[in-house]
Image (cartoon, rainbow, N blue to C red; front, top):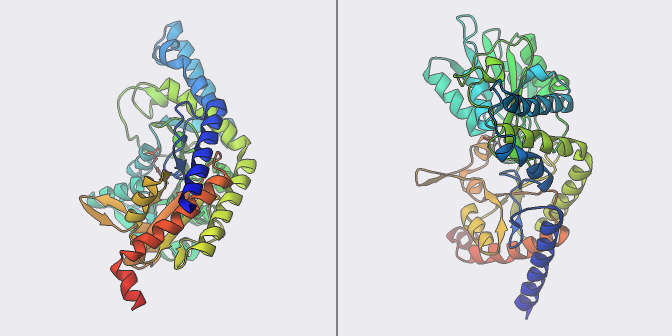
Length: 418
Ligand code: PLP
């Protein structure tokens, strides 16, 4: 009886989702049979953004570097996008470089660092995205000294921990603005001030922050900052690297003279237009969306704590992105729960990274001092502007059932109970 009732309400929910999708949301109805709670992985492209991009695929398709008028028309669209992005971020257009996304920007910030005999150290936080950490590893292989900043148990980098390790031999400090797994917002302004005192450059990966909290490079006092369009309802494969005017930094991608000779490669006009078209509403509607999303997330967290026993919320409650809820469901594997929810049409993400056949626990949770066993049980839910309370209720109901079922099969749960 109970399961029949739930199936009906699920169908009703999916039908109403389809209607929303047709009206003003997704072009491919990606939500129609699913509840999508993985917005930190990526967001759907808004219809208005797709519309803005479309002419630049088949009509205004010419190479933006070509001197003919068709090329110049494409170039004007890129110029306009650059000016728009600069205005939104309150920086100069000459400080904006378009890239292929967050990964390239993080690689560029790290690998482009000018290493001298006097400045041969780099500091990175231990909870950075792999795009930064993998570059740090490469720098180390090249003989650069790399120092990893620890985080406290709530997932925050403390300013005192940077002060303890920085000196005048540090060339670059990299600390992300908001963490992708637990959503903690780092004290970047204070950290950047410490770096400046020692003459080191400061890079912040703001990929998760843009569209969720206000992000202005000059207010933060950073030298470099990056963002990625697909995290704020824009297209995948396009990002922005802000490099403060006057900063000495090497290129990453060499080739043609695009991006004022700082990044080779034929200019990706449609995606750049799409990025600018997505950034504007993301920033203009930030307060309203963040409030709505935050309320939904808080309701979800409360419901989970009320209805599922032995749950831990990973990461501090305050100074956290409004969309993020990262839980450890004790005594079960996050991957099993993820797959179980997927079978019920719910998309979320686990903290573990599947690498070379073995499931590694999240480096972020491990850095916070969370036991390996608990890190394995973590799941990330990230909300977006189209999620509803009805969806949250359904997800909680599914979670209760799935967690109960998986615990019944868990030797850890059996051990705990005996
Ligand atoms: N940095 C952070 C914090 C991210 O979350 C991501 C993507 O998940 C990236 C960098 C990489 O961005 P992109 O997918 O645009 O390469």
